[in-house]
Length: 514
Image 1 (cartoon, one colour):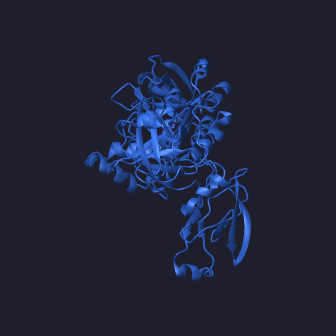
Image 2 (image 1 turned 60 degrees about the vertical axis):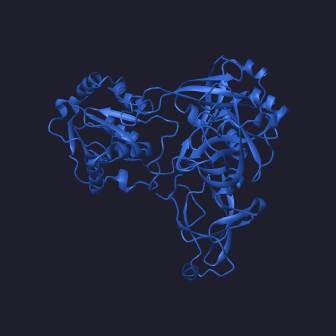
Image 3 (image 1 turned 90 degrees about the horizontal axis):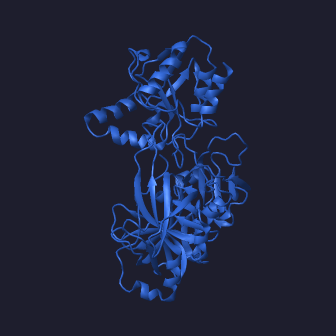
């Protein structure tokens, strides 16, 4: 897949308690304490193998900080899919019910509000730093790590600031801290001179004394995005490109030695006009020169990937770039609008999986969450390995197209997300579990909603489902028998609804018209 993923464990905090840290903060410490809260939540993540159900509740604890607008900032993983969340101020045993205003799982940020806003009368927002910290500065982290009930203050040194992976295909600026990590401080503020410079959020899973902080630049982008109550996502550049270090490559495209930049390898299919073509060389983003490694030289003479400037320069979801095409220099405005689901197999994000049950078949759209869970659950032994190899050999697009972009607007892979339900209507069929739907009655399926519409509008006596790849039976169901069979299957398996809320209006339209 054309992107890397930082192996991180969403956590909690910086190090064990550092004696003397609070004293070194002086008067600032008392002010910060008023703004830091403990957060407890009960999470109900989705069950990708049973999309009509949720997993068992998971109780978590972490930290948060009061910010402007009578809001509390914390990490997304603290409240993502939370059934309920509570806020507890320093020095109090009272837990105040909280509402989740917005969540951005990729950048690991979330905003909460309280049912009783009077809390903010005595708990003011923590002042925000107006400048980005530098390497070797001392930073203090406040939060509630596991192992105690009191507010903890920890100390670390900023070792570097870089642009890289967060999670769920999201990239951003991050601050690395030379300090240990303990569960519980997730969402706690990192402070210099009484002002917040970021939010503690993670650690490397195979490294000691290395933690990460989400800097204010990323936090401010997030808060601006969710000011309307909805998270759209960061502006991104999604076309494939390659570096221009190789002299043979440069000679082939007739690029002079003074010109530096990156070459567009592939342009993502779009329905609207687009200014870039395959083979274009991007030489500048804004006024910044891009070198042959795709880097730009910025603050304090540091190198960053040119994609980082997208979030700094984007206006009306466009960024100015300079390209060389056929030996001529051209200035273009490149669309960089938020595209959270720019991959054929996207992440679920804050959503629960969609599904549709028709007779013995349970349909859902492939997500990265499903692929990862399927691989882990199936790869626990020889039988598991054979399942994966069988899927690869049979040409299952869940694997063969992993990392692809959609070939047309709205394209998604629809699979059988649960083994065939036991019922006489499915007699003799091998289970097509994890197989991707190719056609229904000869109609190529574009996504789950399209499948629901095709099945809904079918007037033929039989409904035939054909699957992609090799090895899966074609499933033919007598249309008149399906409604009764579906009701029996739902009842036998304790499933309340035939389909998820997002596709229910489409399917229920059939019932109203008959």
